[in-house]
Image (tube, rainbow, N blue to C red; front, side, top):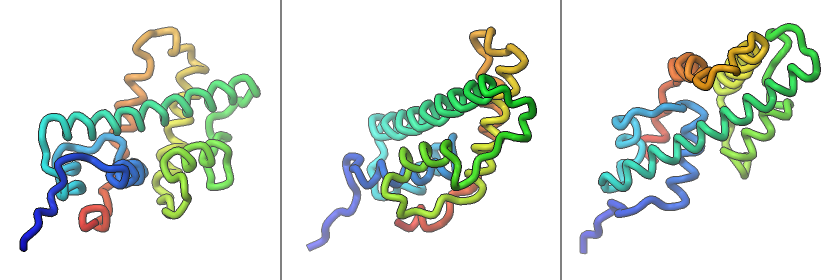
Length: 158
């Protein structure tokens, strides 16, 4: 008997996959979501849930960036270039734990670059006092949204 392999809802495995996709794309298009979650019957509810997941992922990411940037200001870091995000850094540890809890996924180097750029953007904005404007983060979001990478094909095939 033929069984339908289309899921009517999202599972914890879908959430894990979405978190790992975040290492490549912070702002996935609906086309990318539909390609990567081809086993799901897309409804308004499913689409909304996926969008909400990525929104929550971004929120956590940006909260951590702001926190670490403000800490650097308090530590009297004087040059944004001194702020780095390597695999041994505390910021990477926090992000990796959140998106890749079991650490069974090799985080792409490009994500480290994007995290470093984001951290520096927050640091510079705070140093320049731009955080006094309620909409100060929007400029940073625009920069980061342009840094998305293509999601590897194994995300599409699984």
